[in-house]
Structure formats: C-alpha cells, structure tokens
Image (cartoon, rainbow, N blue to C red; front, side, top):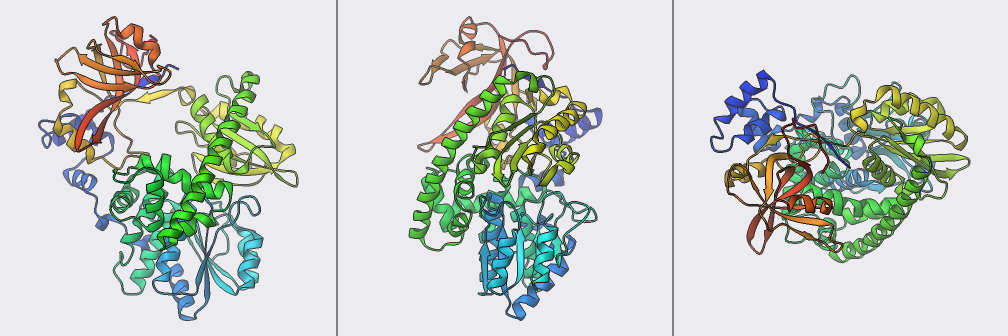
Length: 586
C-alpha cells in the first residue's frame, strides 16, 4: 500500500531556534532540526533531554490527594491493618502491583496482593474481590491502573469498613468514587505538571510520597524498582516525554544492568541476554509475555514472577508464561484471520471513513485487544472487536488511528454501554449483545463526521532530509542520546532523494520477498547498506539504475564487538521533481 509522505517545514520562528541550536552541532546539522521538532528550544532543555536526571522528577505532593493517600497509608501501618495491593491484569497493572507490594514489604509485612481474573471477574474491582478482602480482614486496598470508575464497588467496600486509595491514569468521569484518596493526574482540577504517567508510575509517585512523608529521600529504595516502570511505560504505549522519559531512561539502565529476578528469567527466555534491551524489545518480546498470563490464565502469575527472589521459581513461572504467549499468538493469528474474512465479506461497511465494529461470540476475551490493534494497523481506521462474555453481555476492546480520540467517540454512545474506560487511543467496553447493531450505526455516524480523511490514510511522517555523507559518526553518536524512543519521541525518519542501486543490491529472504540494498546518492560516492522488508516488487525497477527516493530509520547493529550501520527502509518512491508528499507508485 502506498503511503503519503509528510514533511512539514519549520516555521520562521522554529528556523531561528534551529540556527541557534545548530552552533552546538557544527558537524551534525540535522540534530538541531530534530530537537526543534520535539519542542526543545534552549541549551538547558537540550541538556535535560540528552542527559535525563532523577532530579527532574516532580514533587509527588503536587498531585491532588497525595497528602491524604500517604496519611491513610501511614495510619494503616501504625494500626497494623491488613493492606491489599490490587491491580489490573495487564502489564501496566501487574508491574504496578509488583512495585508497590515490593516497596511496602521493606517496611511492613501485613500486606498481600490481588489481581482479578479476566474470565471470572473482568476488568477493575469486582464484588468478589471486595468480599474476599473483607473475609481476610483487609482494611485498606491500594488499587492500581484501575478503579477510577468503580463507584458502586468502592461504595460497597466502604459499607464493609474497607477504605480505598485509587492510583489510576485512565480518563475519569465527572462523578468520582468515594475513596479516601484518588491519585490520577488526569483529574480535572489536578495541578500535577505531567499528565501522561502510566499506572505503574502513578504507584511509583505514591511510594515517593510515602518515603518523603516518613523523612526519607524521595528515591529511598526505589531505584531498584525502576525496571518495572520502564516495562509499564513501554507496554502501555504512553508518551515517552517528561517524567516518563526520565523513568524509562533509568528503568532501561536497570533492565540492562541488574534487573529483578523475574525479568532476568524472561530476558533469558527471550534471547535478549548480553544484548542492549530497548523499548522495542519490551514492546515486542518482554511485554507480551508478561501480558500473556493475564490474557490466557491469571495476571497473578505475572506478579508472582515480578516479586519472587528465587531464580528457580522465576524460571518455572517464565516457562509457563512463555507457553501462554505461544498459545496467545496462535489464538491471535486465527482470530485476526477470521476478523479479516468478516471484513472482506462486508467491504462496504468500512469504505471511506467508516470504523470497524465486528463481533464473534467465540473469540477469546484475552486477545480481542490485540486483534483490534492489528485491524486498526492493517485497515487504517478505528476498530472495535467484541466477543461474548456472559448473561447476554458482549465485551470488547477498541483501538484508534492517527490522533483520533476513540474515548470521546465511545463516550458519546455511553447510553448503549454497560461499562467502558480507557485512553484516547484505546478503550475497553461492554454492552448488551442486542445493542451491538445500534452501537455500530451510531459510532459509524460519529466517526464519519469527526475523523479527517488523512487519519484513515496510511502516512509516514518524515523528520529530516539527509544526504548520505551526513550519516557520519557524530550523527550516530548524537542520535543515541535521543533514546529511549516511543510515542511523542519516535525514532527519527529520514529521507534521501535521488538514490541509485550501486549495482549490488539483491533479493533475500525465504520467499525472496526482501531487498538487501547497496545504494549511493547523487551527491557523494558513499555507499549505504539497507534492508527493505517485503519490497521485492521494486527490485526490477531499481536494477535499471534509475533514481528513486527512500525514507528510512538509521539502525546500528552490534555483533562480535563490531558495529555496522544499516538503513531500515520504510518506503520507496520513484524519484521525480514533485514535492515530498505527492507519492507516485513504482
């Protein structure tokens, strides 16, 4: 599929800032442009961006209710009350539970954790869990990565003498649960400077506040838990800017140098030992395995893995989790294929700007979020995937595209729903099966009237134009400082016009579907190696030694002590004199 190439020039004001910053990088001009694109305008901001420091973290007491939360926790410890740490069954929730549970164990032993089952209890607080907490004498529940909409459940718990501290990051409603404290930077009147913390990181801020309230340094005992923050940030796909960038930076350091016993076992199982672990490795290898337990069995097993101090126990849990992940992948593959057959048979339903809304009562509840993600990526439109839950209720998951607010779209139809909650890009929901048709009709109407055509068109956003001779050691060294990459700080996508096959490019791959490039541009004799996956259709053209344009990321491969540079080519366009953005198929 042909993508639109977007390359936005800097404004006149941004160009002035670029010129000022460029004096710091005399042999590496593209760096200044990349910084300006990320909103970095001063030398001080450059320093903070390139060299994150834990001192950049905000005071946790800037968050609304932090004083109430730490006071109630301190009271619980003083009164020797039983505390339950409760969280969602996904990566963000299980890492959050592990972080708070492990930290509190440094000071207090009368604490346990709880993760609801997806099949039996579903998302968030269940009445079953509240009854269980009451039966074992729990007086305080710290709930993480959920709870912001649990009005009835928290009211019920309060009637039993159980208090709640809610640590969440999902979008709240106007009416909030009657908790002792609610820590959520997205609350309307919350003045906390950074709004995009993961659920685990909200828990981290709570533990910072607890430490400060007890006369300790704000990082006392917390640095060893930053690997949990990094995994939550990557897996929950929150913006890697501000505090998230700092926490991810130091969490990756921990993950690469001295991860907890559970992560060490997963890292070995993933084949990542002795390799530099990146955000991408978490997203595609570590995160899915941690998630698989909650998707296929119980998230409790993931928490066990992340809190154990026993290498042998971690190994046994990791093996089970890896099998869950294999089972999950097979279900995912089969369900995605079935979903695409449904879409193929109803093409008119997703023409133009229409969203995808599909239902199959036989799909596994644990994989519908993944299927929704795949459909959104494949068809470039908001996607809702539903399956049967119980008692006439369908449960679903949605994913969005290109900045379209799927939460707002679903909120407009909340009268048809039993429950819903989530973010701008992803929402979980449930409804009566009989409401699916009307929900599809109304969501389609809303999306068609609010989404822009370019939001449902495959696009590649370009950061900077390069000549091959600009890909020098200084550029590579400075690009490393842009890590960790993720939402709002994506890996730079460069483009080069008018390149040629050096004469040695070749088709590779088991099915001869990829191209291994050796290219030169029109301005130097420098040869650049590259790889283009699933691009064999272009091979006959490029072997004619005709010019074409490429967009790509720059990758460094380390093997046996040597580092090689390779262009990961994202798209090819036949070269002509038109502006970037006016693509022309080969």
